[in-house]
Length: 254
Image 1 (tube, rainbow, N blue to C red):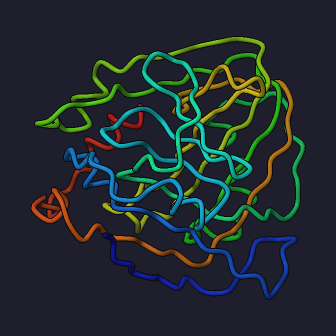
Image 2 (image 1 turned 60 degrees about the vertical axis):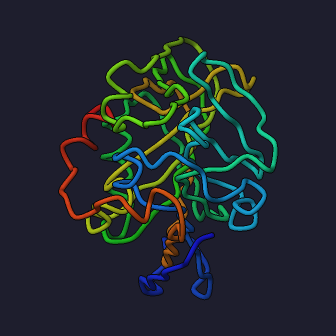
């Protein structure tokens, strides 16, 4: 069971979008709960699919990285392989939206940090959410995944200390993820959080770094945020009053 909290963030829309369009980001649970080992799923992919066709997250027991692209779920497990999870699989944490971008931007020869700077320069305000999609060819991509955990669950920062990492060269694929504003601290990842999926569906994961050869960037401004709070399970007994920013930076590879 889950409960919903809705935050309305205004109606100023991204350049090139309709003045009347409302975009919503739906999130299951909080990043601080995940950091503290709340890995038991509470929402099925079948339910998550109703909230959007684009997004990222993880799976029950922290069993790999989630990519939702064009309405299809992909699961990058710790063995580096990509699986197609069943609709009844649960997630303890995910963020999804219906991706409806505005203008498309051609990009060439840039790194992850340069992509962030580019989006920063294009976005009308750092106080909105943005869904980000970059499809292109890459000279190099480095990713990671996380292995499935067993109870008692360790904190996420301990899991990622021994995370399997993967690197490849000369690959085409898509970056999928979000920019979240600074005030989401404790709820989601402030700043950029992206996953990668190759066109041949043989490589992917949580994005650590890349070198883009050429591609096209699409950004979808989001002006409504819905947080679905677990109504049962370990979440209810987890203390969420600590500042876990340092742990999050380690987990995100920063």
